Length: 571
Image 1 (cartoon, rainbow, N blue to C red):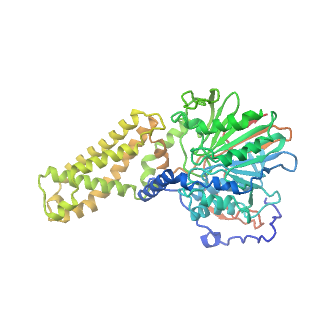
Image 2 (cartoon, rainbow, N blue to C red):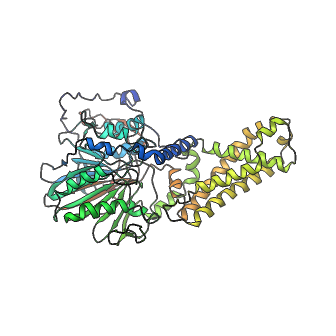
Image 3 (tube, rainbow, N blue to C red):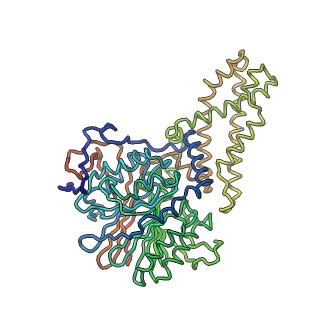
């Protein structure tokens, strides 16, 4: 049942419930999952990433936030304890994003025999939108679905805090600040926004503290942010326990990039440790799965299952050292071992998901086969010109790209696609070997295709009929075959830890989502319930319950959340 009464801020008008699933009625357009390997998206995302890397320092608005209010928040439930939710990587396709939002918004969930009421505090852990931080994308992929899940504030007036991820940073944090850091209309659906900067500190019951960091896509912690947390640290003591929410699981990334954890380690070592307080829990999204590493001091949890494509778990190290021994930081904290104790989905299921690349790659990424088909048509025409030992007329020379140029483009593109690590990471020869091998495989495919094409009469037709025939007949067939070659490459490369992200991003798997529901008791016991959703809903209907706080849409097939592992208790 939904809450009977909704509470409205002064001057806030009630939100009209939709009468149909039409976007005009909903106020936003439900979007399909982002096709990460679609050509135009690859180009535009690459350009945005490059601009963020080149001009990120010039667009950094964190120093300007020094002029904003530096208040601390306090969250305590009516019984002296608190229910707190954590969700990350959520602004992708509607089905997955809304499935998670719907569960977060329900007055109560019953999960494996545990009755878990709706949280009074919601933390969004980064990447609230994909693929870039455009206003329309935030509305359609994040705010709209969450408004539909919880239209107005319920009696408990839950509060929202958000950590910016790398995708939130693509516009220099402009849209993020407009949505989550406001001085008026501080509403995000039925949640009220509670932060005054892109980072925050929240006092929780029993001397627990929630600290949310903004490291500008893994660069550094700015001076105003450090000064803000210096003031927070004045209120910490030996009995204080800290939950640290960070944009990325740098404890995992440090395996290949030893400097990745340095900013977090610096923060803990210089801000928290001098107070005698203990960081008991590090939580992050960025990698789209659930994984928990347990160590002598704290728990390290990755929970990026809020809606974005599934990221594999079978490649996770069984044991990591944090901070890594090969960090360049001279004053790093003492290295401690952390063991992988839980993951969702499990390793076997994660591997099985990988095999889906063959049918999902061309289906999920419209235009990818066309891009490959165009490449192979050009390769074939260049090879055919050499094999037939003729030059042809002026027009044919213009359309026949020199073979040497096409070979360089193919091999270089495949090598770069393998993403050889930059100077900040550990260089592995396997990236280069697999990348060049992938390129040679395409050259071999093109040579076989050229031989087959020359057995047909099309190449002897008068110009420009050979080019037309190649585009109409050879292009689609070679594009489909080449997409399967890419799928096979991704599967093989993924087994060696190369292009794992592309192996799963290319599939856009919506299922296997997760979020955390946590309970802090008045006595200070923290219980973490990792909630998993094996299959998200795909068909929706208007909710017959018209009470103000009831979700607008309900799944036609009920969602069945379960625990990814037994509850974790920290004291």
